[in-house]
Length: 155
Image (tube, rainbow, N blue to C red; front, side, top):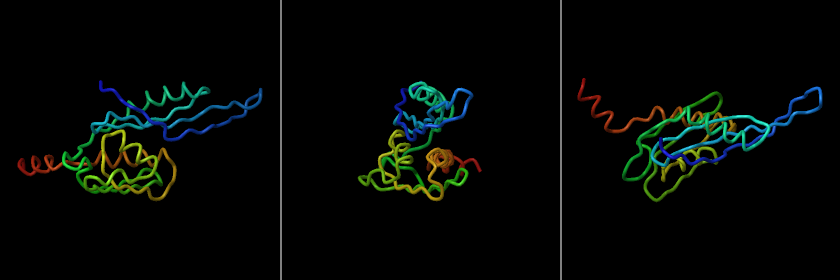
């Protein structure tokens, strides 16, 4: 199994009422990636932030997406638009040297996945978790040029 780096995208404190008062816990959204085209997003809650982080990383390993990265520009092969809930994202390939031009959540996903040049915009919702999941839906739909060549040769 590859070694994954992680980055916390969102940390929220949530309270619930109990008989003894308020129980305060933390909800963490984390992004993990190996730097070679695999990335995942996880979420977890716990009373201790370190426990929540460990649980979120374990949860993110269940939802890993692998996608093709172009060798020349270290970008995605083609433009994609995806949505999850009310969150919509638009992702475009970019030429070499332009860098990661995206918001905090989307930028963390592409940095950890190994993409060096990208233009991305989150539309609609500002929810970090839904935006991250929308990006994963889009990356799941990516196809490389090799995929199209092999598909056309079979038919």
